[in-house]
Length: 83
Image 1 (cartoon, rainbow, N blue to C red):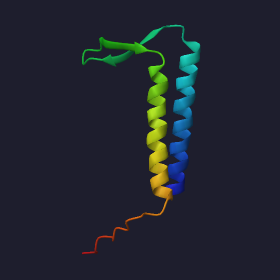
Image 2: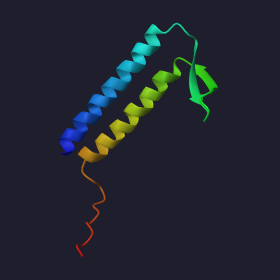
Image 3: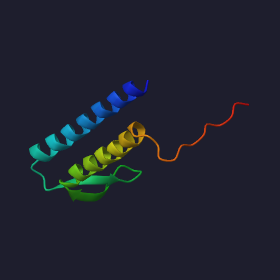
């Protein structure tokens, strides 16, 4: 099950980065909407490169999680006893 979830997560990361790169390279706008309020109006605009930053944050979070799962734990934690 863990291998399947890792594979699914890697696929999601590849898709996220590819969509971010596609949007960054194909858009000719200098600013893009970044936040909407509860009514649906745009509250904030940001530069197009911020899309790449968001993708990089996702890749960093996934990489950190993957490294923690695959590396041995320096502080073994005993499992909870069965009741």
